[in-house]
Length: 368
Image 1 (cartoon, rainbow, N blue to C red):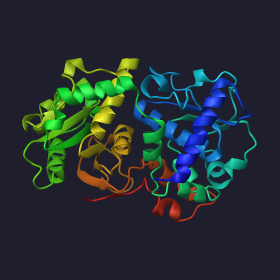
Image 2: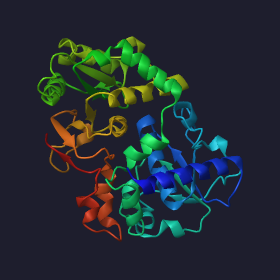
Image 3: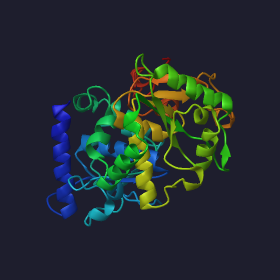
Image 4: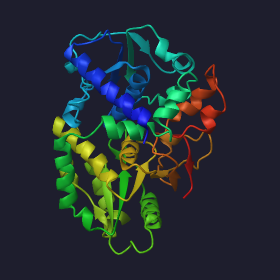
């Protein structure tokens, strides 16, 4: 617990409500336009919330631009209004922050003293490391997030799921009889290789999932182990069903391959968030290193997950075109999101210190 965070959160909620009603002020703003799919959008919203909280600005999120649901459609935001359509007197633009162009400004200057009425950010980059190591914010960050768990704390306080999402979670949890399992291992199976619907997980790699899951079950909990599959497509479900995971009698999945619900509507996005929360209800999580989806689940789970990953490959290895995604089972050391770009960019930041790469809580993995 952090009394400093709790007090700042209450103040932020009051600020958001007053600004949404057109009362109080004058306010300063963070204008946030997330992109990509649900996991990346939520990571970006968390980063924007952290920026607004640390600088005492009102956060306005334009979620539905180019997407299928607003934040209000999937989260309970009555006490913490964030959606752009709730704010009628807010600026439409402001000082643009982009990456890596704004790396030095966001990391090395005192953001709380910026005069601009609005800071505008767009994209899917989780820019929290820049705030985490900004020397002018260091003590404030430590007081709000003493364990470095920025994503976990913000997700569980600011992004509380909508009642309709929780209805889906309860119904599916009961239907699959997840509560009857002696031990539950969630498996995030991201099988589609864009842009074509091409499946890229081999039988050998499915065996890695199975072996890793078996190693995670503690002694005395192995009487009725179940695996909850969080697949990204009907194709992934079909391939998983025909693999060792589909043959061991432990698999739980929400849909048949032809019934998979895509996130192309409000109901689809609610189901996608329900998938994340069902993973979080499991005893252990096996997530994919190349997807933000499982990392959001791990933050709701409030415990470090395991990653199915090919990070054993040497530097310079062409991961994107390797055709392999599963070799090892790593335990993450934090629920904080990983940030691949941080390793590339941090050493070129003007105020760089070795702590930037040695101690960032979302960076490292260790073998189980």
